[in-house]
Image (cartoon, rainbow over all chains, first blue to last red; front, top):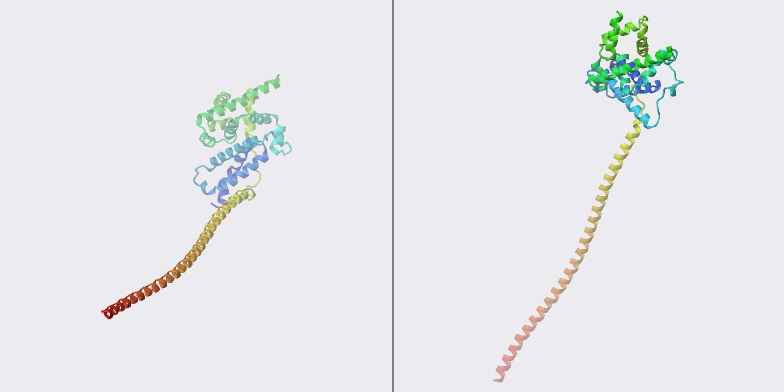
Amino acid sequence: MNQSDFLKVVTPFKDKVFRLAKRLLVSREEAEDATQELYFKLWRNKEKLGEYKNVEAFAMTMTKNYCYDRLKSKQASNLTLVHSNYKEKETPLEKKVEHNDSVNQVHKLIEGLPEQQKIIIQLRDIEQYDFDEICKMVNMKPTAVRVALSRARKTIREALIKKHNYGVS
Amino acid sequence: MELANIEKLLEKYLEATTSLQEEDTLRTYFNSGNVAPHLEEYGMMFGYFKQSKDETFTKTIQLKPEKRKKNWKWLSVAASVALLVSVFIGYQEYQKAQEKEAIKQLAQVKEALHQISFNLNKGNDALYAVSNNLTKGSDAITKLDTYKSTVNTVIDKVNY
């Protein structure tokens, strides 16, 4: 597999990898580094890629695992990833998020979810993967995925209703 | 799509039993801008999902990682291999030197033993010479004895 073949296979899902990394690592810079690192890894293992039926699912699994490792090492070195740490490096989306209050609210709510639910809601509601693929990516049974997804959706909805009602009254 | 249908789909959506197509229907409805007021919270959620999907990785993917990180690892491996090899070779050389030393000592011992045996032989020869002379002496004595007996016989004859 040469470089251009490789890029043809892996480029289509680079944004999905990046978005999942950003969902977990919060900061855009961290997510960019993670994406870059993931593509090094894929490139180093390019001979094996042919063996995988679904390279994209494989890449998403790798991304998830890599981000978990990053989070663990961050915790170990006592560096917590807080959104405010990265205030200066605002991206167009984040600026938009600031201006758009409702979008910002949902973003914060998802940020507060457990890691697993974060990943699943990212994969399903944003990237629109089907359940089989998600099960493979997160290495969970379909029922467990559905339970986690249902919990995440309900949590977000209820929190939004609560906020909305407080706002009104 | 009628509102009743949407509400039904939302119930399924919360239980995470909707299919991708059904979720597509919901997405289309909530992004149409014409959302029933009591479903506003879903509008916020689907609006966020849609916007999140617009974010892209803007950097170019690099496939050649910087080498710095790995070198140290390999250096330590190389160093330990070098150490192992040098210890091994050193040990072998030491063994060889030991052997040479042993051979040298053996040769010296041999030489010394040669000397001893040579000197012993000399002594042996000397002893042979002595024993030779002894034999000669005893021969002479025998001759003398013969002579003496002859003389005695002669004397005896004269006396008769």
